[in-house]
Amino acid sequence: QVQLVESGGGLVQAGGSLRLTCSASGGISRINAWYWYRQAPGKQRDLVAVTVSGGNTDYGESVKGRFTISRDNAENTVHLQMNNLEPEDTAIYYCKADIRNNRAVTGSYWGQGTQVTVST
Image (cartoon, rainbow, N blue to C red; front, top):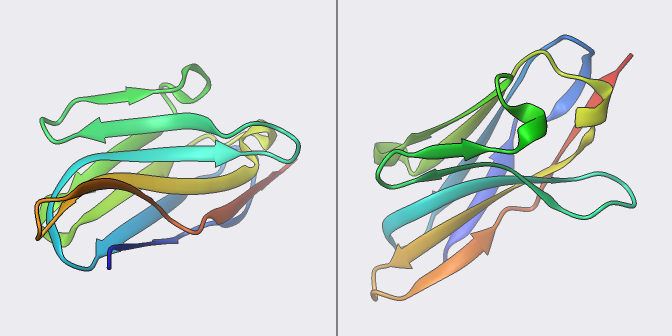
């Protein structure tokens, strides 16, 4: 059973930094892509960053130049380094992964979410 567990959220002042981590476990053969999404109260869930197995990355316009996504293939882990945080970054952050399991079945899995709050 594949599981994703996130950590690293919290409360930070504007201009500060946080590093989110998401770890996958449970019969994993290959992780094809990692994603970070966020959802603020009353808003839709938006894509923040993505990294695919070839190493390419992409970011939402509002976080370009401030956030960096990175993956550790050996540890089945992805990080989101968030710098120069703004109050508008306040949201629940979710990781998602496209994973092929040991039975060669590919599916998308979500973490439980971690709260990021940026104060003025």
